[in-house]
Length: 389
Image 1: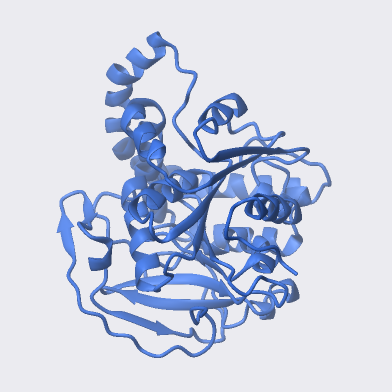
Image 2: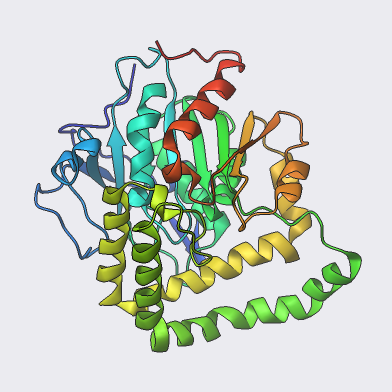
């Protein structure tokens, strides 16, 4: 039986407890993340400035914004007093009757709508949920972290979110960029509920570090990462608005020219739909009014750099413990990731590498049809998965 994701949802009250620690939200058991869950449909009017700690737009039916998103719905959920927002879509009629739920985990500084263009394509394979991670600058999920987001804390959040939505043994996690590490770590926390993981241009430990480089990261690197977040937060407070203006200009200029590329964001915005690009620009415009919200990106960046270069061994051990099939996707034109390193990661048992030609770092929205096709082909060879009709 499919979980009800769209439409008026009854109020659900669950019993549990939450434990807070100095560095953020600690969950000894993800099932204890929430002591109260309340689903509600947001108002039909779009909300640009989120009160809960993020910035984005929300719609009762995203078809109001663009017909290509008709049937997609924003849903708000209260999680132990922390508001959580996600975009949901029911499966297409062609999806297999026992299709799993595809849960999209965005980059750590992004939000649910960052890759909303993928959702209409992916719903051909089953129900889709795209969640705002806590404390992001373009999302509505609140920020329970005292010192900013970290990959492991976000993974605990994803695990708890899945448990409380009662997605029993039916989840395929999709993680994009820095969200890839979050999705992989979440899979290790809920192996009984995860049926597969798709890592898209993921930020994983660098596999080609020389002994000298490794020593440097273990010494000077630790000091830089420790000092980085406070320094970066100060820079963002002073120059955040100008940085957002530069990013907006890069997206706008590259998006107006077919084949235009920008090193600032990676990929080719010219291949992304105008509706998706406009959504990004709206988010940047709203963020420009509150540049202090960018402070959390410093902690997120430090967390990823630490996992990629400083704490490689425990991070790789966690990745080794993933016990479900994993698909590693990336675009051959992506200059952000290292293909050789990704191929080495994909040597793990049950991992499948799949580079896609003529696509960059924005693969999920540059070529959502090719993305969905690759996932469909991968699922087809995994026992227990059916093909869409």
